[in-house]
Image (cartoon, rainbow, N blue to C red; front, side):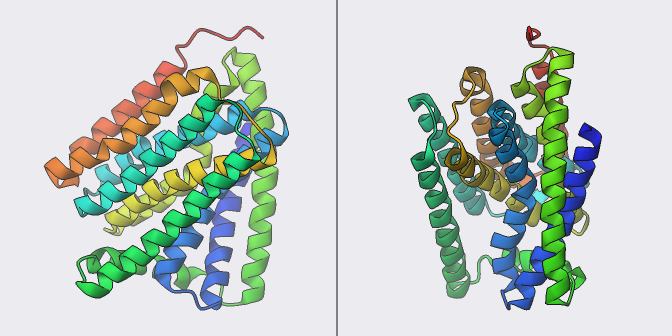
Length: 324
């Protein structure tokens, strides 16, 4: 059941991405705007559907664990793999801005969680923050590029990467819309199977639903970001891989948890608040000094990231068993 759910998620996510890019390009959106919005949203859809499904089935620990675990995987696993393939070189000021945004979103989430139950109004506030940041980033990058062109290489890499995706997207609006619908159906069915399978695994293995969400479910829903970043690294567009990881983390925190809070109020597991949320903040922030000091995330850093991720996963499964 879990394996079938993962396959459907991967298939549904890819089909949805192709269809969404096709629709956006047929509507005349620029490659940069497609990259900042459509691609980022589409690659976060598996996390969104799985998390909301978990909330509706009253297993929100899997949903919250999925978001936190995905954010940790995006930095340690996905950037680690991308850096091993090709060192990630970027401008420190851009990394600093996005990392601070992710850290601020993390602190907002933790602050709300410590307050108690996250409700509809908390969800609205989180989504409003995301909309504001996306608008600010788009306007700021456009103005900076227009003034002095210092981000020309970064935007060119983004444009080239998305242009290749657009080229392979369906040319017919009807086919693109059909892919969007098919992708959503695949995501819904896959998430249902994955959540049910995850609950069964947790009960059979004697581990908590939170741990399953942080590990197995998080890895499965991070597959679209992993595939996108590996492709970008192979093509030499390493800045796209970095931006994809940080952008996905921001979407996960503000959009997905925001939607979950609007759909069903939830509380965050105390263990996640006291440990995993701070690991998530730390791994996002540690990218900054590495870029500042080394000028890049090199292959050695990539290997270290992967080792840290392995240690984190190992730690999760060494926790005392849960009595069912």
